[in-house]
Every structure is written in C-alpha cells, then in structure tokens.
Length: 222
Image (cartoon, rainbow, N blue to C red; front, side):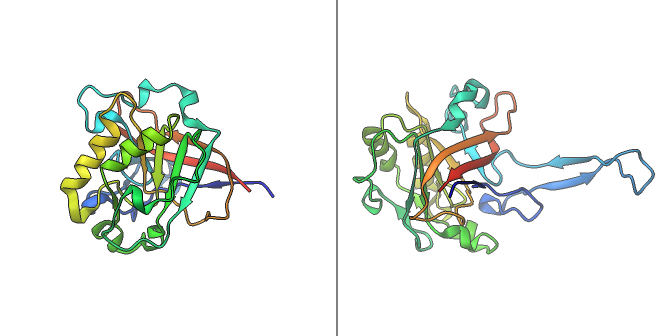
C-alpha cells in the first residue's frame, strides 16, 4: 500500500535548536478577535532551525546558496533509508557503523535513522546528539556518485559534545566540488528498516542567497 508522509517537523515555539539557541518566536499581527479584517503574524526564526538543509555557503564563503540549485534538484527518485537505531547519545557515527555495502550505487538521497528523534522533546536531543565522522563524506562520494543529500534524525551533523569534529564534518560534506548537503533534524519516526522509499521531495524555504533553510520533506512510501 502506497502513501505519502511527512519526514519533517512543523515549526513551533518549542522546536529545539542546536546549542539551545533561539527558536521560533511568533509575533501577533492583525487579529479578527481584535477587530481586524484578517489574521496575520510575524515569524522570527534562525534559518538553521527544525528540519532544514545546509548549503555550501554555511561553511564556504563562496559556496552555493539555496537559490543556486534548480527546482529539479530537490526531487529524489532513488532514495534509501538506513535504519541503525538505536544509537547511543554522543556517538560519532563512522562508515564502519553503517552497512553501506548492500546499498545500490545509484542512490541520490541517503537517510539514516538513528532513533534519536524519540528524544526530541528532551534536552538530550541537542546536548547529547549523535554526530558523524568527517571521513564519512568521502566514503559516500566514492560509493554513491549520484548522492546529493544526506539526511538524518539528529539535530545536527555535529555532535554538541564534540563541536570541533562537527565543524570538520560539515566542511567535509560541503567544501568540495561535489558537495553532499546535510538534511538535519528529520522526523523519521514514521519509517523503519521495513519501509520502502519510492520518492522524496525536499521543499526548502527559498530565500535569496540563504546558507541554510527550513524544509518540508514529503516521501512516497510503501
């Protein structure tokens, strides 16, 4: 049975932020209750909040931004989900921790389920999140020549307990002639190792020259 699910979280004022930074703040604009003709609001939020995509400009001064990618870039017809849950807090995930050998080499989107999304409403989600080793990026490039995006259910590619290594990981993914874009803080609770991903569409908020952007992620699964 085929269906379409969200693999992204809705933004709200309780959305966790990396390093416990600023989250979404909603300021009331017009209000029908107060006699206005319509309801409006003003949103204040960091661009790396909630389910979001990192662009090369995030760590490379002259790197590409969200408006440098054509619309078709965000449609993935060969996605793959790798379920390695549960991953322990503060773990640095290396290529040896991922069973990559059995994955077809035409994958264009690789998602890794750590299971850490179950702790999203706990401070451990940002304080003790798993991260990824910098050497993973090159391994992915070698094995998956069509890979464009690497997504996961942890708040960041960088573990908060090892931020120096995390910065190197971001550079290894983004500072390259063939960058692999991290898709961070995904909601992967609805999928598991038995889920077949048929197509995924990532829809980032398009802001001129953005180095990162919140995303809506839709997946056709069976």
